Image 1 (cartoon, rainbow, N blue to C red):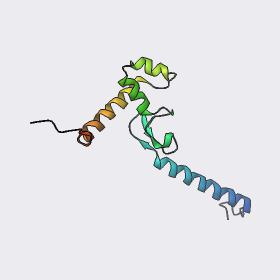
Image 2 (image 1 turned 30 degrees about the vertical axis):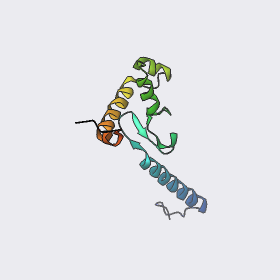
Image 3 (image 1 turned 180 degrees about the vertical axis):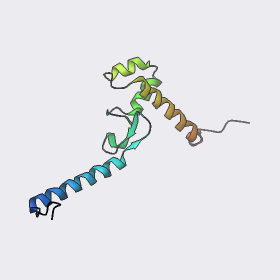
Image 4 (image 1 turned 60 degrees about the vertical axis):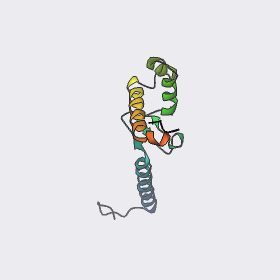
Length: 114
């Protein structure tokens, strides 16, 4: 029964169940999306879950490779059609720096002599 006292038709009930199921699927997929920063996200549905610049399919690793090649940030932004603000590049550099500092010991090639 509805609030107005009338019975809901079977089609109404089915569409209501579909709407609820749809909202649950959306909520479940959103819970898998990780906001790694203001501009960087990791979503399993975008680029296989690799970190990307929010609202794009540009992977953070691509941007960092361009930074490593010495490209200036304005050129990087222009290369991607202006879809990547300089603040997103700065965030990518900052987060990669933090990750490196936390995980640097894993990448030791050979110990330094004393």
